[in-house]
Length: 254
Length: 349
Image (cartoon, rainbow over all chains, first blue to last red; front, side):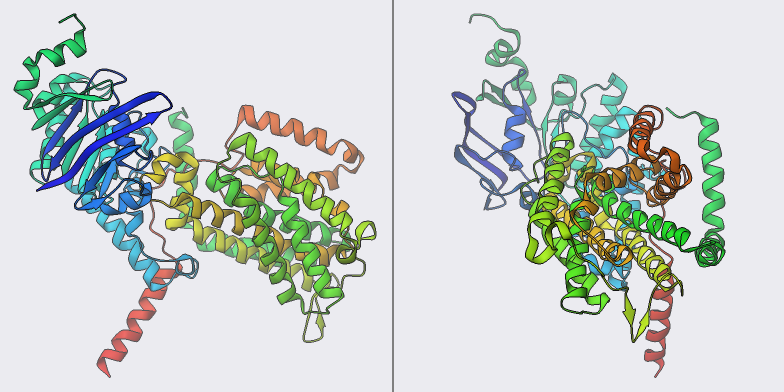
C-alpha cells in the first residue's frame, strides 16, 4: 500500500506548465529520490505536496486523504514535514528551541495557561523539552542543544533542519537538496544519517538531490523529472544507464 | 562576529545576574518604592510616571517589533484610543477607573484586530507606512468626532483614579504606585508570554515566516494575537495617560509619541524587556534634563537612531544570552511543589 500517491499532478503558472501530469508514489519506509536538471520542477512538486501551491489538476493522496486544496499547516499535522533548498533553521533560537518549534503543533496549552503558569503549561513545556533533549541525545546532537542554531557549522545546520522536521512527528520527510554545499565527507555522513532514520527509525523519505553519489547510495527508487514531466523511473542502477536521463542531463540529439 | 573576550565578559555578567536574581529584583523594587519619597516635587513625580508609561508602551510595541519583527509607527493611535475611551467613561458615565481602563484596552485591542487583519501580508517598511497612516487616521478621528472626543476642545477635567473613596494622586503617591503596579504586571505578562510556545511562535515569524508555516504554526493567528496584545497594552496605559494629564485632545497622540515609543525600543534593545526600560529612562529624562534643547529633541532622536543602527543595531542592552537554555521555572516550580503537597495530602486522607 502506498503512503503517498500522486496522480496527474499539474500546475500551470500562466502559460508555463511547471509540473505536467506527474504520477508517482512512495511506499512506507522507502527512500525515494526525485532528480532532474535545474528548473525541472522538483521543488515545485514539494511546494505542491506541502500546500504552498494549489495544483491546477490532479490529486495528491497521503494515507488515504486528499491533500490538494489543504492549508500547509493542516498538511503538517497529517505528518508531512519538509526541509528547504536554502537552509531555513531559526538561527536566533537555540538548537533545542528549534526542536521544540518542531513539536509546536503538539504543544497543547492556551494563552491563559502560559500567563498564569498553570500546571498544564509547566507539564507541557517540561514534557516537550525533555522529549526534545531525548531526541537530540538519540541523534548524537545533545551536546549542541544550548547553542544558537546560527552558530552551528553548515552541515550541522542542514542536519538540524531535518531533525526539526522529524520533531513534528512527521511520517514522511521531504528533503530538498540536503547535501547541497557539503563536502564529500559531510555528504557521506548525511547518506548514513538518512539511511539510519529510514531503516531504523521508520521514517519515509522523499528526497530531491543533485549529488548523484548521495542519490545512488541512499535511494531505493528514483524518479527523473525534466521540464515538469516524468521521463524515467526505476532502481538507481537502471536510472544510471537510462539514455533519456543521460540526454536530459548532458544534452544531445538522440 | 563578537570576540571571545566580550562573550566571556557577558557570560560572567549574566551568571552574576542569574545567581543574584532575587536580590536584584528586591533592589529594583526598593528603588521603585523609595523613588517617589526622594523626589523634591510633583514635577519629578510626573517624570517618573511618564518613564513608567513609556516602559509599558515599549513592552507593548516589543510584542510587535521585538518578538515578531513587525514595525509599527502608529502606536499613538492605540494609546489615544485607550485614553479617549477611558476619559469618556470616567467623565460622562462616571465609571470606576478599573473597568474604564480595561474597556480602553479592549477598544484598542479591537482596533489592533482591525489594523492587523488587512496588513497580515505586509512587512518592514510597507507595514511601517500603513501604521503611520493608521496613526494619522486615528488622530483625525479624535479631532473630528466632536460628540465623543470633544473635537478640538478635547476632554477636560478627567478625574484621578479612585477606589472606595480613596483618590490616587501625586500627593499620596497613589497614582505613581498604581502605574508601577500596572507596569510590573504588564512586564510579567510579556515575560510569561515570551517564555512559552507563544514566544517561540513569534520568534519563528520574525525569523522565517515560510518555515514557520511549514512547521504547522498558524502564523496568521499569532500575528493577529500579537497586534491585539500590543494594542491592548498601549490602550491600557493610554487610560492612565488620560488620568495623569487630566486633559486630552487629538494633539496628545500625534506621531511624535509613536516615534518616541519606537526610539525607546531601538535604543534600549528590541526583543528584550530590559531594553524598553532603559530606553524609556533615557529618552524621557533627557529632554527634562536638557530643557534648553527641547526644540531640537527630535533632531537628537534621529541622530541617536542613526548612530544606533550603525554601531549597535541590537540596542544598548540587546544581546543573545550566553547562558544555557532555561526551562520556564520560578513561579511554576513552586506551584508544582505546592500542588504535589496538596495531592499527597489528598492521597493519605
